[in-house]
Amino acid sequence: MDINLRQMRSFVVVAQAGSFTRAAELLHLAQPTLTVQIRRLEETLEVKLFDRNTRSVELTRVGRELLPVFQRMIRDLDAVVVDTRDIAAKRRGVVRIAALPSVAAGALPEAIKSFREIQPGTSFVLKDVIANRVLDLVRSEEVDLGIMGGSVTGHDVEVLLEVRDRMHVVFPAKHPIGGIRKVTIDDLMKYPLVLMDPATSVRAVVDSAFLTAGHIAQPTCEATYMMTAIAMVRAGLGITILPGSAREIGAEPDLRSRQIDVADFSRAITIIKKAGRTLPPISEAFGDHLAKSIGAQPLFARR
Image (cartoon, rainbow, N blue to C red; front, side, top):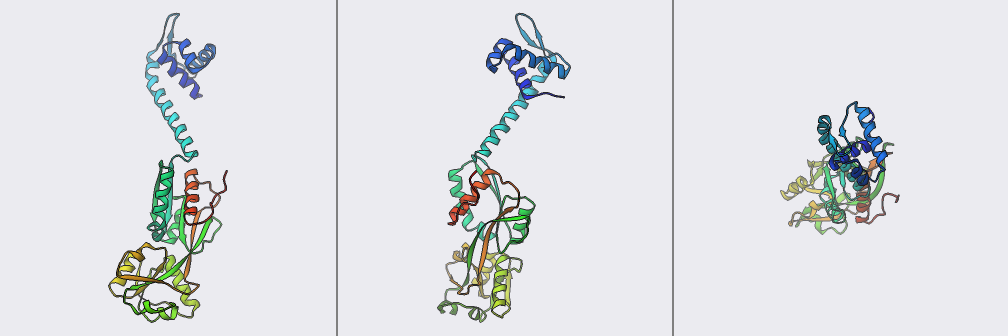
């Protein structure tokens, strides 16, 4: 069945105007052209839609039944066109992001807030998960952008931006490590350690740095979330190692932090997307905005 939008729109306008002449004026069509469109619609449906004479045009019973159906279809199609144009113009849309919890609670909320001030029609879906899960969500295209820690390998993922995040030791205010001028791995080895779960990017950095120095990190306690590690430090169970960008570091007034003066104690923070896939325009725009907010260049070339 070959029914097109022009035919449906012509039918609706004729029905509402009650006149082919008036409908042709409203549609900016020649009346013979409008007549042909209605005739072809009737031929396709194999039913008469209008009763016509020299004085009036009236819908048949079938025409009356079809009118609200065609009106709804036209409204829906018009809405799709408007929505799509808004999305293309970056006036609205949904940005789907998977991010490390430290980033999701740190730099990301401010970046989202400032972006929405520019593009108030944007909404966000944010999944705060550990690094491996970020990678999975990007690969499955459940999210547009991923923000994760550590190196990314694989041809199916494209790295858009990489920055470095230095590690800090977090300790109680009166802890002896606070008096050390430069904190090294040997200094860290002297005290009980509260470390992040082995599946996290932070733990990968810590383990790698310890191994490079000829040591194995032996935690007294392990935690999946940074606030849990902070609570363990507050309880006196040890000191912990967290990225300097983590807002959890400043959440406790009785705790202090110092940057660890070892080059290996830093992690890469990467913004990634699925390789070979076109992002929604609004997600591209937010990716550029996020890059600028952390002092980097735009991620995407202007089209």
